[in-house]
Length: 189
Image 1 (cartoon, one colour):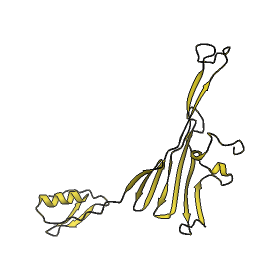
Image 2 (cartoon, rainbow, N blue to C red):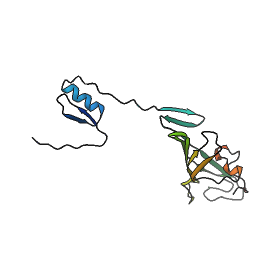
Image 3 (tube, rainbow, N blue to C red):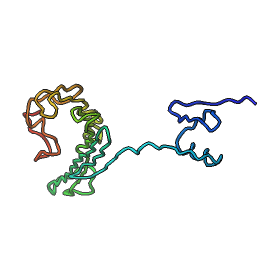
Image 4 (tube, rainbow, N blue to C red):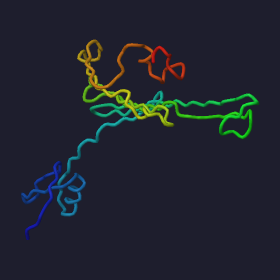
């Protein structure tokens, strides 16, 4: 009786005991078919990909056979408490002289970086969610680039393509995670 078959790209194909072609979507399906029909055929399974996940110094790193990805979160909070004179009543307070505390997320920057195929080809993707309480610039991309080192790790001749900070001022290039104060100087702006 004629039938229809759907063939997917990437399916496993083996020759059966009577010369017929057997298609299966994965190794487990082949093993189940052989078990059901009492066929003593061994199915070779591919080696599982190497994945090592580690956490160190606030960074989560996943290492694969052909790459690495490091995930970092940067969160900066700001708490302000306005304390007026006894003669001033701030909006939103019950009486004169009452303080008005406020809390906001000043900066949130998730970052992904690592290498692909070879350690000479690195990448970085960093988002900037700044002042999430209504800033029009919230959700911008700080960095999104690929970098290739032609000197095999010596960092003497590299080509970088994408969006990144122009290397002019040291304070501007220093990550907000490593700044001593909440904001950069007025000169950097």
